Image (cartoon, rainbow, N blue to C red; front, top):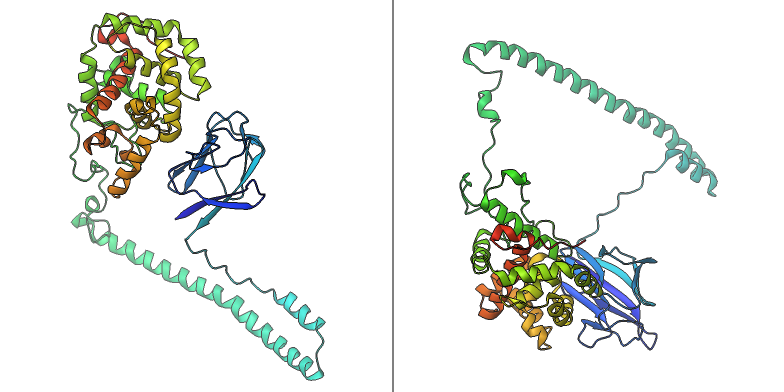
Length: 433
């Protein structure tokens, strides 16, 4: 296992060495940060270091004085390497990796005979030592010739044996023509089957053409790629799945393959059916489209995706007409604080932020992060990506019905806004640059 340590000088100019011991580790001036440094050059929440197995990724959290990595501005998340220097508004942190894996034993360096002879000749020695050196030198030339010739003799012997075996196998192969084999003890069709077996995960069966194919498994370490199908060839189910997936891609920092299974897709579809043909939601989507540039600018101030902010505001308004921009302004503060604690690298994390909005609005921005940490501790066999989903948290009784319903409404509104007319809503698609 690889551990990451950062070292910096505190206000007393003493070196402080800190281990990054969380999946999401926040550095800043605020006392609630995982590493709180009372330095005016730092923002309240300045930098986040996120762990993915043995990879650590640093992200600036919209700090006032900015962050540099090895002298270059950290504008996008970047992986850290041993010896890197992070400069947080003028306060430097050095990066150091430690691994408990044993280092490979270095091979003994080859000794050059000529250099050895020169070294021996240049060192002071007695007369008897000179005679001994001369004797060993003569013997060395004999043995050197032997060690040079021996490998060549071995190669020649192997070549002769190989030719003999080849000739024998060709002869044996001609004797097997009547039995349908080619010199092999097993028929060719039994040795290699050009048609591979359909691969399935443990506990699953091959998917038939008329079954709904899950987009992915929240417990999987690697999301399942979604096949690209021309829009004109998509049936209704495929179109729905694509709209949900496109929305989830758009709200995350970087999640090209969002993870969601068929059961959650069914829950989202049921929630969407409650809005089908809604004139209020259509009016709100149109309002959001007219205010798209302002929503985008607002989201940018907090390093949030505009699609995420807009869908959150639409979910807050629900079936009531209102100003999407005004709702977004009201929500932006808690959403930003929750993002810092929960993260937004993956789409499912963004949905957890929405579920925790009531906690964030009440000032309890760390509550959901602590809940997920406890759930991960209680379920060590479950992957961290699966733990950080509303589906798993609801299964474990860690979300209220109201929190879960609000997250579903967010997913439904965001999906509808991709193509409102597909859901019987008269509005143009909501798009951002």
